[in-house]
Length: 282
Image 1 (cartoon, helix red, strand yellow):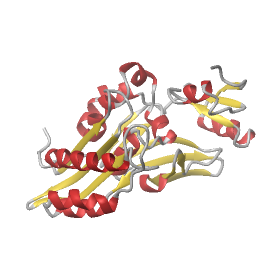
Image 2 (image 1 turned 90 degrees about the horizontal axis):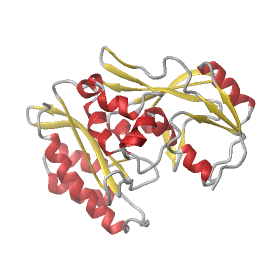
Image 3 (image 1 turned 180 degrees about the horizontal axis):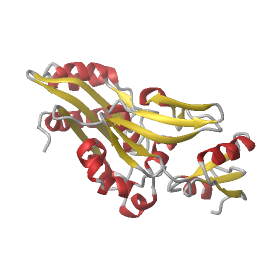
Image 4 (image 1 turned 30 degrees about the horizontal axis):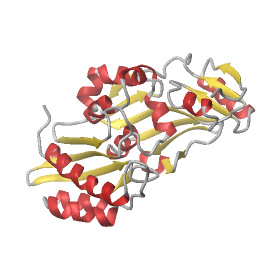
């Protein structure tokens, strides 16, 4: 299929992009990597009057480490993050997730900001952002604001972004020697959307783990924290953590798997990730 007709504008700055979005009152879309947007345009699931291309905006493709934070600009390509030594050292969960995202051709064009803003419930990066307790930087006609990851994802493909706002960067806590991470997903084929996936972080302490954060994807409309399972895992009770998932998760059946299968697979992934969390970082 071909997309419905639309106008095109190339933004020269964040302010210019915000102006263009505001001028079209919710009937405009931002074009970054385009790996999700172009598909929805071609299937006519999206038919904006205007595409605002933000690829020419300087400064949005920067990876920076400042103090205890890692800042990743919205236009950083998946492939650039995958190759980044700063990401590998200071945001290892993102590095661990990268090879699971689609295929190299997609990662060459797709952007981290685009993936977060699109908020696909089966995507890896939104769950990683929640597991890391990250933040999202937003700019709009009313100025700048920062939103915590768990407040950013609102519902299915719905985020805290307003119609004239742009996600400019994500910010993550930099890993320390006590940081522990885990990531696993199950898909029919490598590169497919996950049937179920899990991103996890924790802090190593003398008796085991503390501050355990488990964020599932593919089992709800947004990334899902499993707080009862987190508490059980922090207490060292892996079997209890797996049992707790039945109270924490309520996956719906879909074309890939039934709700019962998804819940079972969530337990399988929790056991795998628990093993990863117990291992010191290389």
